[in-house]
Image (cartoon, rainbow, N blue to C red):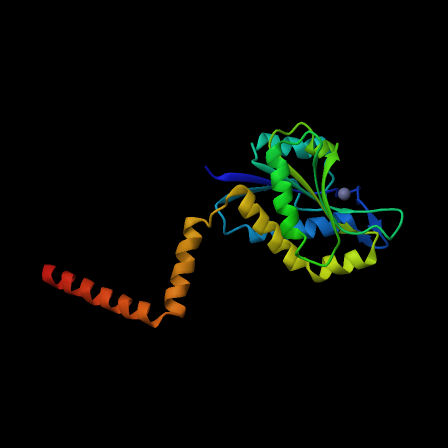
Length: 219
Ligand SMILES: [Zn+2]
């Protein structure tokens, strides 16, 4: 059965999330959520977004989207904030009543994203009572990709953006045991044969010749 992933970019619309000058959490998290969605396109997976534009959704609406779609995993993406600009680093959060599967998934996710940048690793936070992760029986992870209130975390977020996308995708592939979709596999094989392997091209010619012979015998 095709796995279903709900990606939930935090905040949106009238709710900017954490703010640092002209930088809004809702924009950072939407940008990276859309990039993760694009990077997942080659996998045999259905991705449902809670939002793809700058719109406001209640936390309960987000959880309902995961429930209604019978998702295997709900991935909420946020950036953190603190009164002091000294607070810094990444976290993976799970609900305080999360299953052992969610805990294992959080550990996998953290190990991948902690090597995507030089941001401090703040660990898995398993004491959260987030409404968006409440009452969902599926896997639920909430990422805090650095503090928007810390300028160095913002620099790390920007300069390692692609690494974060890659790390999140790698973690999802492991957690959900994702495979590359069949149609994409064929495309990849074709590109390889035509592009890089002279021996394959020879084989291809031979095959065509043999096919011609067979065809001739029937003419
Ligand atoms: Zn947030």
